[in-house]
Length: 303
Image: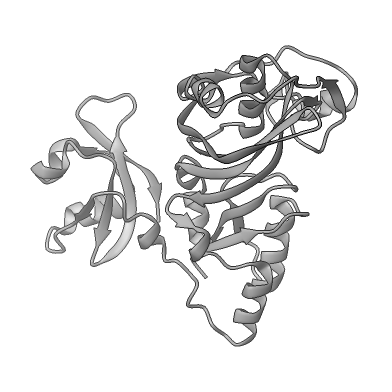
């Protein structure tokens, strides 16, 4: 089975738990997820099956949309509710929506984050969360990310010296949303914690496209595989290069993943790389600019 399962990961399980359960339901080994969601986060988690596991990196690079909640007035070791409280401050009054949105706007565009100690980034061959569990604080590398938008949603609540409000964020690969919450608090001059998070969309999938693990089990039981998204559909955002079947030499070169002259492409596609290469209607490769040879293209993925 080759394709993508748009899974709605429920809270209380890790992304690896989800992959394990999908393997068991589908009785197949070649299964991979496209970007970790913490156990206390629910939402869209595209799962790649069979040959589609070659798409994992490509899908991880896509834009994500999250909704959630931030609480001003306390901070934790993990920047969410999983950690221990390390700072508290009673807010004398609530911030206005304008004040909060102004600071959110300052956290958009190309920004640099310092990853939380409880994260999977490696420093000197060791995961940061491993240092954190040992009580060791290490210098963390700066982490450039891109935030398309960071918006206040609805009306905030002010309860017992704490302010709670909903947010929506659209961001690129590797963005730590809980760190954004913490950094927003710093800009406002108060401790802050991300107290809820849902991944609403992971391009090209949204909530309406997804199945839960329970949905998947029921579908498989009645041999319904209509949920399976073909590899070609997941690659539809890329321009298509349909090779002329009569050019047997070119067909063979592409089938073998050969490096080609950029002029091999039709003129209209030469400025649109990467492009998907199709032979007789079947996806064979994703061709992109050669990283070191001018005027050349090479496959970044073969199917």
